[in-house]
Image 1: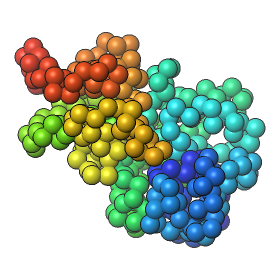
Image 2 (image 1 turned 120 degrees about the horizontal axis):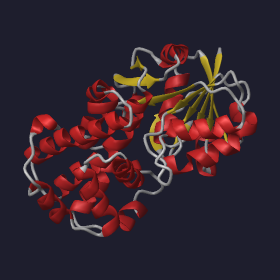
Image 3 (image 1 turned 90 degrees about the horizontal axis):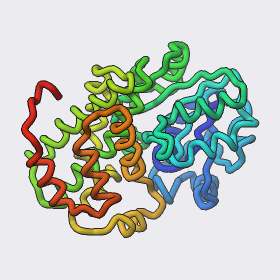
Image 4 (image 1 turned 30 degrees about the horizontal axis):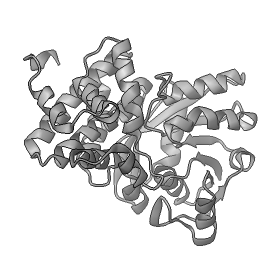
Length: 338
């Protein structure tokens, strides 16, 4: 029986702990920051704050202690919000070991450094003098549906084929199918940048626009995500896969998407601080990622008009209707030039 540590007990972290434990072949330790989450899972076998209505198996031990979470762990899955990744890995550093396989399941970028999560982890773990075996997990996966057992397919990416095949074997079952990929850059950027486009899709809905608008937004959003992915060293074909198009379509159209929900409320005229306050601790990564996406685009001289307009709405007070109008009245372009 193998040991798996899941660091972060939001909806996605809790869902992954359910997946890892439901075969009965793993002992899972779920690290939770919030005392009320630890109490809820320990006493009621349910994360009533972030994933209500889904039973957490008895072979998941919840803890707030890094030592307890990480001791003897073979696979360490990190699922914390992107703005807490560096700090939490620095806290975990005394308990990290060379034989551990690290898997980042966070779909975001570090706002100040513009780094992907595996780059942040590499910096912290590398500074500890440990050899690094690291991958990224991403794809179209609403936590509630994964926890419920709906058939779902996602990708595990790493340049270490032993890691990808190990994680694939340990987490796959009849309800969750993992595909391997060696394009860490593309998988991480696809999973992160789609959140920005999802906010834009929500804005369209909040403004009362129809399916034509959302279809155009998804298509052109994929084009600009692909441009930045390739400029950063990722593979164009990854953007046609689960971590690219798959996750983009899900997040732009699904009612469970927190990023899309933020966009809907912005389109209806609500202010961002009020929207965030009403989310009760849930994180919409696109709000944080927009700054980093625009920063990366400018660094690599890549045109990302949708991301630029979402940044203007979120951080500069531009009205959603004005932003959509400006997107539609830009200089005429060739589609085949992306």
